Length: 385
Image (cartoon, rainbow, N blue to C red; front, top):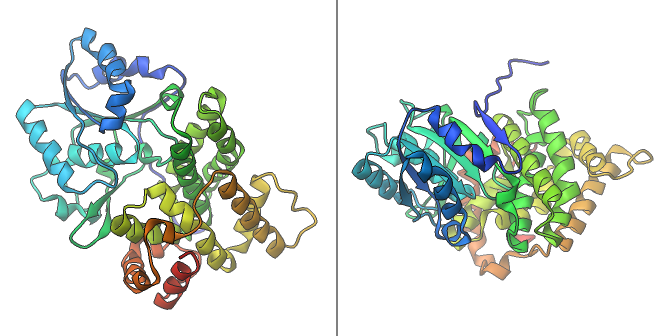
C-alpha cells in the first residue's frame, strides 16, 4: 500500500427487497416527529410517495412533501426547499428518487443548519456544520449519491454544473429497496445503469484508486455489466434490479473515495448547456474519453475486459484494453444509447466554449489517468458531434 489512503462512506446502509418497511424504525433512531420528504413530480406520480406515507403516518410522523425537484436541478431549488423547512419546522429529511432529489435533499439538510449562501458551499470542505438528520432512498440504480459526500447542482449563470464536496453531505442512513426500481422505463434503466458502470470504470482507473476502492469497483463492474441488459429488457426482473442497485451502491462507495475522472468532466458542460440527462451525457462521452485515456492506465483498462467476462488470456495488455472498448461499443448499441451530440442540438461551433468548460472542472481532471489539454478536449468533443 503506497502513501496514505482514507476511506469514508455512509454510516448506515439498509439493503434488500421490501426494506422500505423498515423506514419507521430507522427514523425513530433520530427521535424526531416532523419530516420533510424531498422528491420530484415523477416519483409522486409513480405512487411511491403514497406508499411511503402509508407506512409513516400510522406511526404518528408529521410529513411535509416538497416535490419541486427538477432534472439537473438549479441551486435555487435548495433555497425553495429550505424555506419550506423553516416554515414547517421539519426536524429530518427523507430524500427519495434519482440523483437530483437525493442531491437536493443532501444540500438542503446542511443549508438548514448553516447560515450561508449555497454558493458558498461550492468546492471542497466549505460546509462548517452538520445538517439535519437525513435518510436517502434511491429509486434508480445509477448515481450512487446515497453513499457519497458529493452533490452536483446547476449554475445557470455560468452554464456549468458545480460540485459540493463535504463529509457533512453523507446521510445518516441510506435505504435501498430494489422493489422501488421495478418498472423503471427502459431508457431510464439504460442511462442510469450506464452512469453506474461509468462510476465504477472511472473509480477503478482514477489516479486515486487504492486497495480499498478497487474491490468495490471490480464487483460493481461485474454486477452492472452482467445485469444491465437484463434489466433493460425486462423491467420486472427483480434479480437483475437487485444486482443493478447493489452495483450502483458499490460504485458510489468506490468513486466517493477514488473520484471520477474526465468522462464526468466532459458531461457537465453539455448537461448544463444542452440539458442532456446526466447518465446519457456520460454515456455519449464514455468511449471517446476512454480511447484517449487507455495509455494512462492500460493494465486497469485491460482488467475491465476480464471483469466483463471477456477471454483475454491470449491477448496482449494493449489488445485486452481495446477489448474493453469493443465490449462497451456493443453494450451502448444494445441499450440504444445515442452516439452523437448533434442529436441533442450540439454543433461544431459550440465545441470551443464546451472545451473551455471542461478545463474548469479541475477537481475531476486531477483524477484522470492521462493529462488533458484544451486542444485534446476540443478533439474529443468533435469526435462525437
